[in-house]
Image (cartoon, rainbow, N blue to C red; front, side):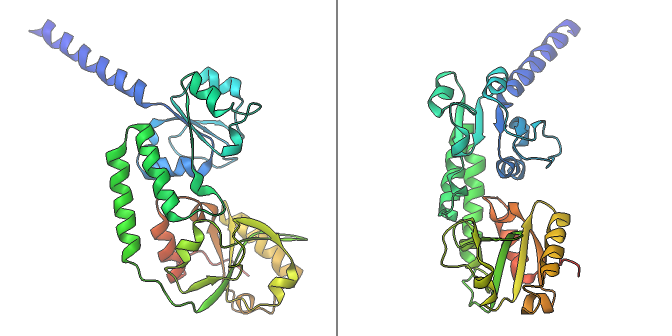
Length: 281
């Protein structure tokens, strides 16, 4: 009986290790895709992430701050690699066709593009579920997200906001392209740059100065970086007479919040309640 029990335990251990070795199969090359998998509680599938700079994700193996080489990718041989369209080139990770031929499935979140919508994000998630064999889990998440979003009312716009991505001789802002547009539908905030369907682009200071601004959101990877940008903005004195600056309605907003992300409902709530970190004067 004891021998039988030991043999049985060995078989169980074998199957557990076998399943884990099969499940651990993804390399992510964008920070937001890593976070999506973490929020879906699928981080155990990630064998490594790269391309996120200094950002660290607990329990996720960091391969490199920058994009790994195709030689390194071929050495690791994941089942799936998630990246941007531009990453799948011969001189980078390799073309999509090349990767498929050696058994690596390339996956792209097209909803990270400038003209994307939440529907595009749902479509990406659905495709991700198919690629990972996790359709039940991910489709259930999609349904919950859709139902919750659709229950929110479209709000009348009462405040003008500008979403700044950098401050310097030129001004980097976020336009009406991308998922941000759908998020703002459920808030009383309108994007000052609503007629430019791009995610990030440069704009003249004159355009900003000619418009009233109720709120400023400074996007960055962490609060300290946003604070530094705010200090730079105040020192320039170009916007100091705007309502947002006079009332210190200037907030840190994480880049993750307007990228494809599972927790976009929290972002909507935070924008509606200004439950965000107000930057210091």
